[in-house]
Amino acid sequence: MNKSHEVEYCNLELRFDRRQIQNLIRDLIHEGYSLYWSESDVYFLISVRSGRKLVKLRFQRVRNRYKIIGDYIIKDEKLSALLEKLINDSRGHAVVKRFKDRQIVIESIMFGEIIRLVEVSGMEHRIIYQKKPLVTVEEMIQAFQSKRAEERAVVLRYELDYELSVLHEAIKEERESDAALSKERLQMLRIEMIQLEL
Image 1 (cartoon, helix red, strand yellow):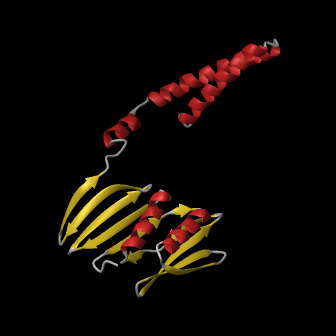
Image 2 (cartoon, helix red, strand yellow):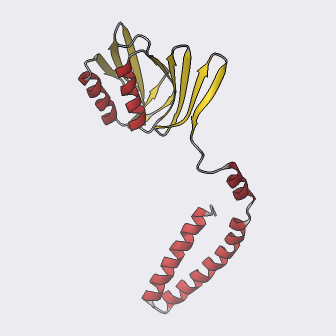
Image 3 (tube, one colour):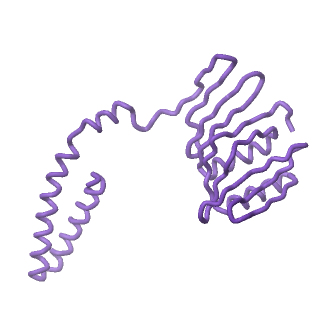
């Protein structure tokens, strides 16, 4: 165990099934940790002996799945690696603070991926990495100001009415192929209406 190694895990939002907890237990045993676990209707608890410390990982049952709760300070590199594997495998969210030589490196993880990396030394902090957003603020403003959706909604309602009348005529005249084509067009219009949130 590396004495200078210390990692704090905060704001954990990890959701997983029972199999992933069983895999974590298997990995812990494989790495040589002494551990025991218990389960109630509400919680699944894994107690891991790490040197002289006992780390209690608490999992809360949410229907037929689990979510980890609490903040954890881990001073064992292997245990940290296993916890980070759990964050990655469950595509979870977390804030990870790594303490090293009077310096803190803070990782913001979302969906199992680092989105921001900040280095803090005393009063100074430096952004090492920041994932670019998929949509820029300008694009969002443009989308909110756009009237295209409202204009398309008016035309879409006319197209829907027309296609319903075409389908009605095809059914009345027993033209099955025309009715099938009309139903396909109505399905496409329906999808577009859902996209426009009508």
